[in-house]
Each structure stands twice: as structure tokens, then as C-alpha cells.
Length: 360
Ligand code: NAD
Ligand code: ZN
Image 1 (cartoon, rainbow, N blue to C red):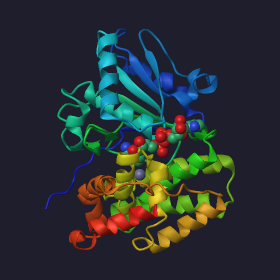
Image 2: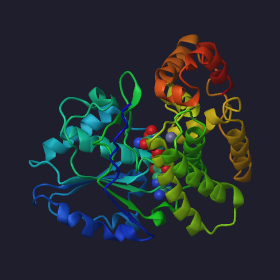
Image 3: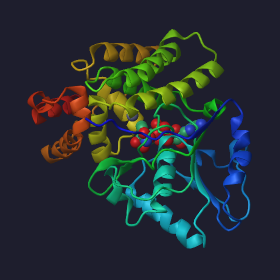
């Protein structure tokens, strides 16, 4: 038996207003004046001087606005890498992602693909990346995914939605400034926050559970309950605590796995483009048979925060479309093995998944 030897984020700053320190943090990392820092920034912040005014641009540094309307694609990563290589003679000093999981994942993938040959799709899977990525920094502006701490970057490729899971994926530096999340709309706050909650439920109820994952998962779950159920915190406390819940939830799945909701949500995402947070919510709402207590509390939180989830996503799909979603979901073997156990194929049949998808 061999134990996994995981890398972690090597440096992290936490605090309201810590985003102001970005310039001081980056300065020593500049290789030379021709090797730029490339800032990948969610386009929701275009024209928002409170955020963009604090992005320290010098020399050939570049700020690229990116829409988070669609989740990252391998082709999008390849295009960004090509543009950066064409526009700059020197390899960048670093890539800085400022946004939610979508932008953080793009930043990680671009940093990897600037030093590795071929296309991003060649690296979807486990431990396929050979060369260390260039210096990359993650600055989350919405909390829940754990993308700021994880060892993966989830990409939709030509034939699968799968992460680049590697020792070179985690950020070299993360800036956790909860104040950056203050303007997230309520629905989105709930969907992305529930991603964290679902990470906890799937990790804590999985067969891979161990004391490492449990310690992080329990803390994240406790924070989620304070934030989404108890309703006694100030806005600032909620922002601070959800940022730490996201971190702990991400740490919890580092040494275990996610489960049924994520497997099925990947199917929805691949076929219909349903985004991760809302997709997980839509799926999880129907998973009482797998996670009875977790789903019960989820429904309660939905009610407290007045959230109505979309219905009928799969109402007009034909058999071949159901097959595509089922193929994607069932290909994620480690998730099922974590959720159900080694013999998961005995109970997780195509018919069972189809019946579940039909409810969504
Ligand atoms: P997101 O990045 O897709 O953003 C959701 C919405 O919130 C967007 O419209 C965005 O513009 C907006 N937004 C972000 N910050 C804001 C702010 N401060 N104010 C106002 N609006 C803001 O959302 P997400 O849920 O954080 O990320 C989902 C992505 O994360 C998916 O692509 C998923 O695959 C990925 N993910 C990755 C991991 C990982 O470990 N790498 C884990 C879970 C999910
Ligand atoms: Zn997730």
C-alpha cells in the first residue's frame, strides 16, 4: 500500500483588504521587465474600479477579462496560451486568476499549458502533467468551490469533462480577501456555497473517509450550518466564514473524493452546459436515497433562503442524450467507488441513473 504525497498551496494570505497587498506579493516574482504578469479577471469586474484599480499593471503586464457565463473549455485554454505566447516574447512571470471557480481553473490550466506541450485535452486525467507550471496565483471572489485550494482544474474537452489533476496544478499563492465577495448575487451565493456543503456531505459519507478528510469536512460543514441555517451572523462574518468553509471543504476532498451529486452533475454540465454550482443543487435535491440527512438539511436551507431551482431540464431529452449523460457520470469511477463502495456497479445501473435524471 502506498500513500499519496500531495502538494498544497505554498503561500496564503487571509484578511479583509488583503487584496491591497497584491503588488508587494508579486514584485519579487517578476523574472524581468519583459516577462509579464498576466491577470485573468472575471468580466463582471470590468469598469469596477474598486477591484481593477488595485490590480498592479507594470511593463508588459496584461489584464484579460474573461466571461464566466460558460465553464472553462480545453479549447479556450489553448487559445489563451497561444495568445500569450504570440503577444509576448518572454514566458510570463506569472498568471493571476481573479474570480470564481471558472476563472481560477482557467488560471491554473493556462499556467500549466505554458510549459507543457500539446493541448489541454491531453492532460485531462490524473498525473499526466510532466513539467512544473509557471508561477500562478488565485484570488477567489466568490466562495464555495474549493478551487483555490484543490489539485485539479475542471475542463470541458472535446470528449469529456474532466480535471487536470496533478501535483503542478495547485496555486503557488492564494489571496483570501473575503471582502471581494461582498457583491455576489444571492442565488449565485447559494449555488456556489452549496457546492461546499455538498463537498462536505459527499466526503463525510464516502467510503474513502479518513481522519484527515473528516477533520476538514466536519469543520466546513459546521461553518456551512452557521452560515446557511443559523442566521445569526453579520454579512462580514458570513463572507469570512464561507471563504474558510470553501477552503476546508476543498481540503476535505483532497484526501477523499466527491460522490453521486458531482458524478451526475458532470453529466448535466457536459450535455446541457449546466454550471457546477446550480447543477449540483439540481441533482442533490433528488438524492435522498443516497444522502438522506444531507438532502433534508439542503431542502431546509433552500427554503430559508427562498431559492427555487429550475425544473424540467431533462424533460425533452431523447434516449441518446440520456446515454451521453449516463456515460459521463458512470465514467467517473472514483466518485462512485467513494460514494457506494468497490461493488458500486451492482447497484448503480444505467436504468437507475436515467430514472434519476428524468426527475430533474
Ligand atoms: P463562477 O466562477 O462560474 O461564477 C459564477 C457567477 O458569479 C459568474 O456570473 C461570475 O461572474 C459571478 N461572480 C463571481 N464573483 C463575483 C463577485 N464578487 N460579485 C459579483 N458576481 C461575481 O462560479 P463558481 O461556482 O465559483 O465556479 C464554478 C466553476 O468552478 C466550474 O467551472 C467548476 O467546474 C469549477 N470547480 C472547480 C473545482 C476545482 O477544484 N478546481 C471545484 C469545484 C468547482
Ligand atoms: Zn464541487
